[in-house]
Amino acid sequence: MVAFRGVTKRFADRAGQGEFVALAGVDYTVPKGAITGIIGRSGAGKSTLIRLVNGLEQPTSGSVLVDGVDVGALDETNLRGLRRKVGMIFQHFNLLSSRTVYGNIALPLEIAGLSRAAIKARVAPLIDLVGLSDKAGRYPAELSGGQKQRVGIARALATEPKLLLSDEATSALDPETTQSILDLLKTINRDLGLTVLLITHEMEVVKSIASEVAVIDKGLIVESGRTFDVFTRPRHETTRALLSGLPGTKLPDAITRRLKAEGSPGDRIYTRLTFFGATAEQPLIARLMSELGAEVNIITGTIDEIAGEPYGSLVVSYSADPAVLARAEAFYAQTGLSTEVLGYGA
Image (cartoon, rainbow, N blue to C red; front, side, top):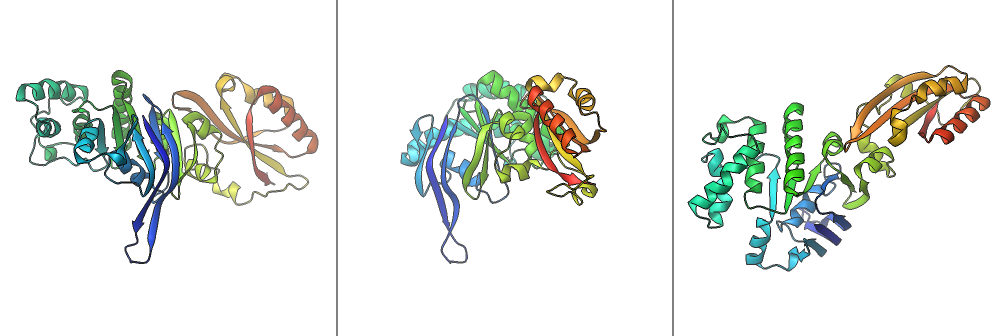
């Protein structure tokens, strides 16, 4: 649905001292029908990337193709036509305070010149879809944050787009409201076959909703793939840093402070075990304890889903005696457990 080909974007430095490089050569493809997340720290280039998709910004070099159309090659008339195929929802809703829920959703259709009857025929089902059938006559000031975002989503869908862009659409919402919005986006993706491209710094959002993910850092895509694969086997240090805040992945500080890179006689090894696929439902910890014949301590862990697939992460410690380590390695190889040595400690 979207292809970034060698895309760079530079802005003039506000201090008048040269240029700021927002994107440094992005090559990435967004598949049709998927929910794809772009994650990265603040200032990594996420917002610039998504603004190129609907022509709010133009690339300094390279090209952005939406459904095969080069956005940068369009004149103003054709760009307006493209934007009707690309809906966008915003962090701060961007609703018109003087218009009701119905009026805000109807606005892009009025601009497009549809008749009053045609507008009503399209707006009414959208209000039902986002769960606001009893709020059609209310104004934004009378709505909660989640309800405002639902209006924003319905407005973005009014022109029947092929692609929906989400610019930090849940970062201003509380966790419960965020989940309800994510559930709505998943429903829209499934029932309407709409491609969704979202940018966020919230790993929980990507973990919950995105089937594909790309990690951006300093204007470059540094890692991408299936969300499950990237989250369970992160290769780039930026990805690992972003994922470190997820529940169950962080060691207690008291343990982290005393970990060493190399072991000494009498030390214990601290290892992260990752469960997924066939390993997720097996009683492997009981078998590990039996196999090692040594005391195995469970330090921290979590059981969850990533993009709808079961996943577990467990940090354990046990004796770093060479004989115990050899039995552990043989067990991991036999069972297919993914492991990461975090360090050694007394």
